[in-house]
Every structure is written in structure tokens, then in C-alpha cells.
Length: 76
Image (cartoon, rainbow, N blue to C red; front, side):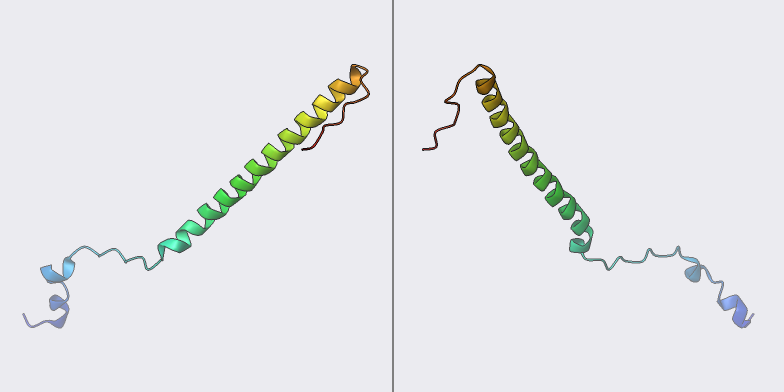
């Protein structure tokens, strides 16, 4: 019973495999999320600016279409 092959099959060697620990840093996982958030913020700002500009152009066009000649906005 001193068979070296039999020693490899002992009950203590049959324990389930331990999962490998992940050595990734959390910041590496957050990079794509932060990039997506930055892109979404830029799109939001550009969308708000565009809506403001279109509203101002619409007001100017409405004023001109009514036949007024003093449609310029007075800047303070």
C-alpha cells in the first residue's frame, strides 16, 4: 500500500478547486462607465444649448413674420 500513485488520490487532495482571485483594480472596471457618463454629460449640455438656440431663432422668426422691424434682442 505504499504505492506513490495512491497517495495522489487521498481525500484531502480531492478538495474543490479554489476560485482564482481577481487581481484587477476597481478603477480599471470603472473606466468605461466613467467614459460613458462623460459622453452622456457632453450630449446633455450640447442638447440644452441647441434647444436654447433653436428657441431663440424661433422667437426671432415669429417676430419677423408678424412684420415688426425691431426684433433684435437688447443685451443688458
